[in-house]
Length: 265
Image 1 (cartoon, helix red, strand yellow):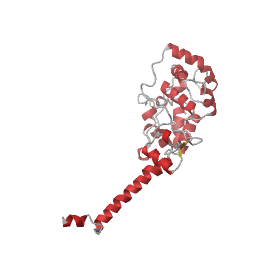
Image 2 (cartoon, rainbow, N blue to C red):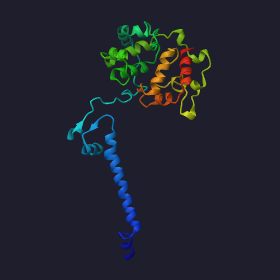
Image 3 (tube, rainbow, N blue to C red):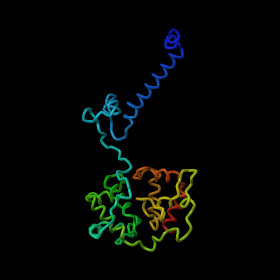
């Protein structure tokens, strides 16, 4: 009994140091979890120290005062692409899309093949078109022109437009790039040491990932502009940051090479 009392005594240096270390770690963890993290949240401004603690503890907003920021920062996207997201298009949906399509022709061409450095929509994957329309409407992807055009579109309208353009034939300029000439290394293999995946791992033919757009035949200037926008963060509607992570690691020469290849130059 005497030995036990000596171990758990404040006179025992090891016991005192251990208790102090545990208390210190708990205090730091509490400061980080209950104060620092809530204060650093980008989607809202907490009303004060007590509100930060309540936020971390999960207290509902209705029981506390929350000061919403005047201009909340949008996340990457609110569209999570899945294989089941788009239903097989029927004639009625395609017909409705055709009726809506004339407002798109000035930039994207009468048959979905652009001559104005806008992306080609003919034969594009319907999920890719739908996601971008949704992102333009929600503001997760910004464009003065597209934002105004999609403002009055409902969800079914966007699905119908995606079905219509996806069913249009792509022109000869959109022939698979790798059928014209061998893909550059940065396109084919990427650069694993710099965490750059090959473009074809997501945008390839049979290897295309759900929601990834076709790039073959797109305008060189458009492709370059989008890669630069991802690299700088000006475009950020890739929900998991894949394109931003890749583009910011690419050199200007690699961006030019990639844009020229997919454009067929």
